[in-house]
Length: 234
Image (cartoon, rainbow, N blue to C red; front, side, top):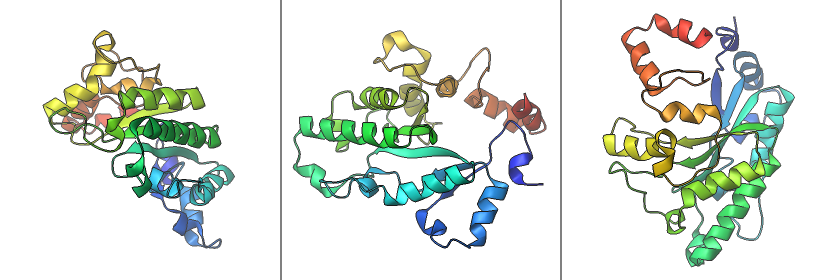
C-alpha cells in the first residue's frame, strides 16, 4: 500500500529540489507520485533563489517543481516567503522603505504566481529567538514586518493556508511570543484572518476542530501512541 493511502485524512509529504526532477525518466518521479501526496520545495521558492538579481525574478526552478506537482496531482506548500537566512547582498544597499517595497512586491508576485497551485505558504520563518524577541535581520528593520507579510500574502491569495514556521517551541519565551497573536488577539499586533490550522499554536484548545493537531494533542499522543491513528482519522 502506498504511504499516502495509509491514513485517508493525513497527507504524507516530502521535500524536493529541482535537481531531482531534471531527469525525466528518473525512478524518483514514480516514487514521489506513488507514495506521496504533498511536496515542499527545499530552496527553490526562497528569496535568494528567486531574487538573486535585483532587476528580475527567476522562477525557473520553482516553476519546475510546481509543474511536477500539478501534473501528478500533488499538494504543494510554498516555502518560504520571509526568512533571515534567505536574502541577497543587494538588499544591504537599500533604505528601509525600499526594503519594505521589495519584500511586499516579492510576496505579492510569488504568491500570486502560484495561486491555486500552492495551497499553503510558510509566510514567515524563524523570526523569533529563544528570548521571545524578534530576531535581528535585514527584514526586521521593517516596522511590524511579520503582520505585514501575512497581510500581503492574504491579499495575493485569500484562499491559501498561511503559516508561521519556527522551531524550539519548547522554550517558554519563544512559545509565548509566537502564541500571543493567536491565543490573545486583543493584546497582539493585528494579523489578518488566518486559516484554521494556524490556531494550533494555542497550547490548550478546549476543542480541536482542526486539520493539524495542537501541541497539547501531540503531547498527549506521545504519552499514548496507540491513540495516534484514531486522532488522525477523526
